[in-house]
Length: 239
Length: 266
Ligand SMILES: Nc1ncnc2c1ncn2[C@@H]1O[C@H](COP(=O)(O)OP(=O)(O)O)[C@@H](O)[C@H]1O
Ligand SMILES: [Mg+2]
Image (tube, rainbow over all chains, first blue to last red; front, side):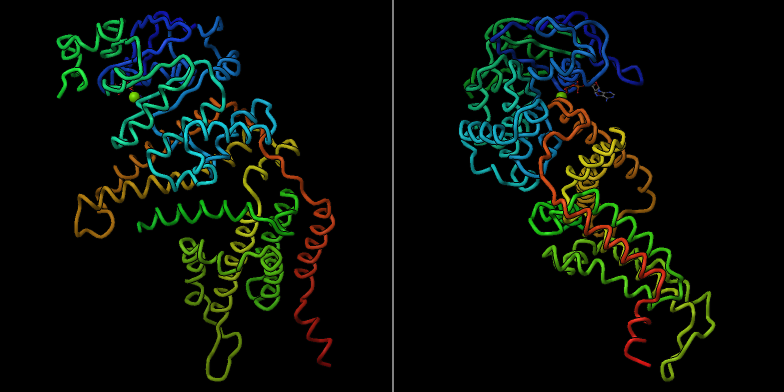
């Protein structure tokens, strides 16, 4: 479904955020993309979605990630960015939610109906008419996820979805992610989140893939994690 | 509350006003834009001593406010941050232009004072008119109608994004001044020596924010068109607006208060 070969991202000033990354994601996978701050997780997502220039090749559903394929690819690829504030640009939650589908030709009424279903599914119907700049961080994250679900993507990228959430909101978001039926890639250094939501894990360090494998093979390997600036998930250490 | 944060939330709430219903809200965005431009141009073109003729121009926005159901006071409340700047514009005139124009009792009014007041009025009237436009026209609808008359996508998108960025930018200012003042207790404002790095940071941070924001838009299919706006506007716009434009021009060409006065005083 997604085939990344030799992905290299270099920013101005010669900073290499990613170097020669190879990674394959199959339909229905839930992949945890782990790595310390600056490992290159967001750069990988931005390359996948065509927001950053890169070298190498990325295939998405048989389409190459290049400018002319972006409209088609983006229809099927959702990206929940880390900063929900910047993800939501319309005044109201509902307006933000219908923005995507209407751009792709759905009628407004139909989009509103779909939005109501998704709000109910995420148990946030009360946010429908609220203003994006007047809701809490946790609510904003849920609303951001709702706007992405509106696109009915086959693949969803989550960039640090639990960062800066309190335990209760964190739980709500994790449960929502678990219930979403799509191929998921979740970038985080919150390894408990990854342990809870992913079957496979790819470990990134300084722009390179260190290891890809089954969840337990990586998340239970204390030495491997520590060498790469991470710690065992609390749910494993049992603290 | 932080001044910048306050300003940003005021701006955002103007967008709420624009979604209300009224005869003014129902006019086509383009017609209102046209009227606003003509109005401001007319106001600006008044002679700097023609305070009486200029003053009559207030009638046009006043009518708009009355019909829209938005109190004029809302305009001044929302714009209280920019208002002082507008009022400061002519402040030096009384010192430059001291020749006496007329006197009221013992109080001598110089040309400078009159031109200062005229300048202030021009600023205030233009603000009133622009605010009325923004408060009765959702920005996306305005952009959509600009696209309809084939204004290039790039310009229209810029307009939309600028509008959105103003409040994002102010939020960023707020966050930065807050974190600055937390680490510089007892300091009033930002020390002059920190201005350079503060501004630099501010620009970089708002650019990053803007970049993420625009990214989120194109990821959800935005391509410069406004499919999501589907309001239908009153056909009468193209009757009302020309009338009002004509009124503006007539008020500029003829001294209406004097004409009206001459009807009664012979
Ligand atoms: N716009 C940019 N310009 C220059 N360097 C960047 C930019 N974005 C990220 N980087 C650098 O690229 C590296 C990877 O960043 P990022 O992909 O954001 O990592 P992560 O999401 O894993 O924290 C970091 O060293 C970061 O400083
Ligand atoms: Mg990141």
